[in-house]
Image (tube, rainbow, N blue to C red; front, side):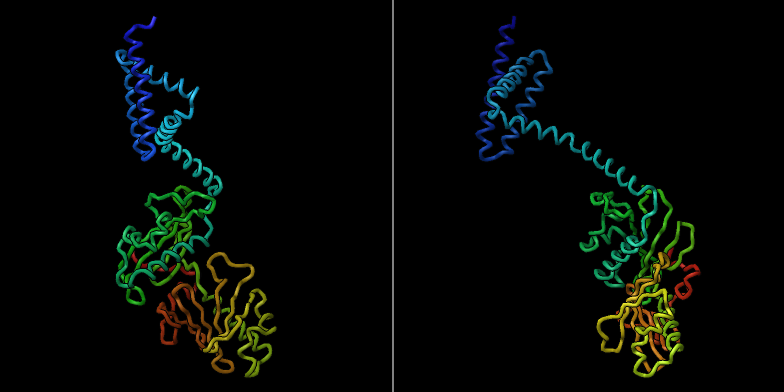
Length: 374
C-alpha cells in the first residue's frame, strides 16, 4: 500500500509539473529562453528530489505526470522534450565533434597514402602568403612574428594552414593538399633594402614525410630541398628557358639568315619550330608599345623540378641579329641582353642592363643555393 505521506508528496510533484508547464507556456510566448530556464530549474529540482528517500515521491509524481501527459497530450509537453534534447545535444556535442574530426582525419590520411604533397600547391601557398605581405606592409616595416602577421585581415585568411594555429576547420578535407607554412623575419636586407623574411612550406607533420620543403624569401627566391638536411636548390626560374629561347632564335637564323623584316617574327617561323622541337610557343595576340612580342613557352614533357616551363617570354628586336629576352617570376624580373648577359631586379620595373646578375645557383641550377638567415 502506498502511504499517505508518499501519495501527498507525489501529488505535490504532479502539481509542480503542471505549474512549471503552464508557466513555461505563458512565458514562452514572449521569451523562449526564459521558458527554457524555468523548465531547466524544475527538471533539475525533480532530478535532485530522486536522490533522497524523503523527497523521492516529489520526483516520482513529477515524472509520472510528464509520462502520462506525453502519452495523452503530447503537444502539451513539446517544450519539455525540446529542452531535454537541447541539453543532451549540448553535453554530447564536443564528443560528437571530436569523433567526426578523428574520422575526417583518418579518411584524409588514408587518401594521402603516406605520400608527399604535390609541389605545385606548396609553391602556390608560399607565393600567395608572400604576396599578401608585399601588398599589406611597407618593405621596412614587416611583422616580426607569424602571430603579428596573422593579425592583418588580408593575411589572416591563411591562418588555418599556418603551423601552430588551432583553427583546423578547413583542414583535412578532399581539397587539403597537405601543405603548412611558417613565417619569420631574418637578419639582412633584401635587394630593395627592406626587411628580409622566410616563408617556408612543408608537409603536415601528421603525414610523417621528411619533405619536400619549399621556401621563399623577401627577394622572391623560391628554393626547394628534399628534406631538412638536403641542400637548397632553385625551385622555379625562367633562366634556362630564356637561354634556350635565345639559342633557338640564333639556330633558326643560321638555318636561313633572316632579312630585316623577318627578325621580329622569327620565333614563329618554321625554322624556329625545327630548331626547338621539344618546345611549344604560343604567340601573344598583340605587340606591346615597346615592340615586345610575347610568347607562352612550355616544355614537353614538362619538367617537375626545377620548374623551367610554363613561363612567359618577351622578345624584343634591337636591330637585325641583335635582340633581348625578358621574363619574370613573381617579383623577380629578368633580362637576357643582346650580348647574352643576364640581369635581375626585384623592383617594380623592367630589368635593365645596369642591374646586377642573378645568384650563381640560379645561373646554374645544378649547384646548391646559399640560404640567407638562420
